[in-house]
Image (cartoon, rainbow, N blue to C red):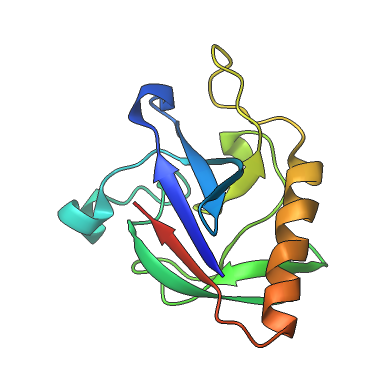
Length: 142
């Protein structure tokens, strides 16, 4: 399974980044993250703890239980400058510390995604099914 997250600069603000997410080239939902500080170019010196989106790149995905949330979530492996980057439920930049929050963006409503629980459950089921079939799941941020 190939997940591609395309950041949309026009929807981003001083505190958050909004992306479109595609699963095997089909639109799935939007993703809310912290502010994109272009870590893949600027490096660790640009990171503001708890307020920075992860760098662009392609990572493998697993599912495991989050001690913080108490439920199983997708987790991106080998993310530069970060540990324990997960895809989990949440609606605004206060709900993420680098993690990826699925939901649906409404133009004109900055720093927010709606219906995160619904978007998360749909995406997580697809990832769970692919992994159970033995497929490799990758998540690429472009």
